[in-house]
Amino acid sequence: MAMMRDSAELIAVWQQNKIPVAWRSGQKGEPLLAKLPFRGDNKAWLAAMGGVRPKWNATQKYWEIPKSWFNEFVNQSLHRFGKIYVVQPYREQEKCAPACMNASGHECQCSCMGANHGVGNDGSWFEVSETFATRWHNTELACRLMQQKKDS
Image (cartoon, rainbow, N blue to C red; front, side, top):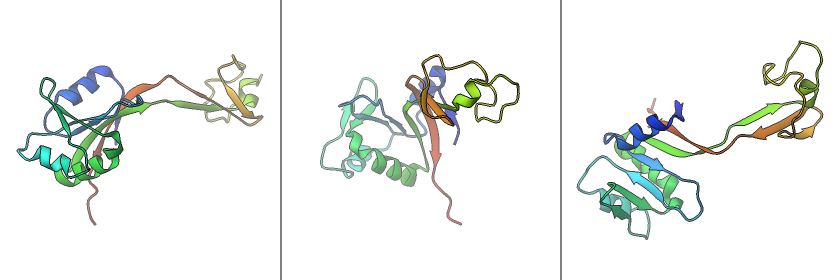
């Protein structure tokens, strides 16, 4: 499952028409946007997932469905099409330790692989204990291609 975060790649995924796309904005109250390869029964297929009618955006050619349908939509898309792109918010987490950030030597055995070794805490790190600190980066969109599992 490769992940992409480049905006040009995300646009290309959204504009292709062969693999369904589920786009979660992460914003409260925003619907799930769903793009599907054309099939005459797409509206009925989507409507069978819940009690709300899917809304078609004819200009942009996508469906708006409740975000509570996300898991069902992904499962049903995998069953029907074999693949689906999922675009959703993503925040990268860094892990380190105060002992590493405050170190004076060159030896580092921390998960940061020396990236934060000896640089100190500039205030962006949350120090959980003397052996663990974490920080989160800004939210961005990421995309992953999911494929139906093959039965063995």
